[in-house]
Length: 122
Image 1 (spheres, rainbow, N blue to C red):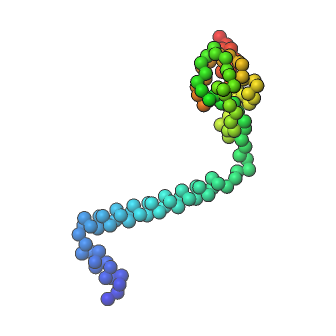
Image 2 (tube, rainbow, N blue to C red):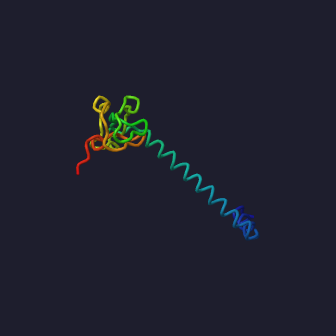
């Protein structure tokens, strides 16, 4: 007997519940294989250096800085950030920030911006 014909005869005699489990199992296996392959391709693409990718030094707050308190050097630090994530008015020098009294509260781990340090205009 032809092996393919024998396979189809066995499948036709299989109970419907078992057939359903086999189909679901095959779908899960195929989905996992495709997901794994896709994630590997994404990982490869992300490791390739982008020539347009630039980092910029920005001043970040390390702790919460309340409005009206003097900023100390322990509360801020320089950090390299993707140029696309940097605000237009972000501070790029610690010297411009240390000793300044912000007019607005600055949350922890946030970029220090000129708008936070300048007086609020009414």
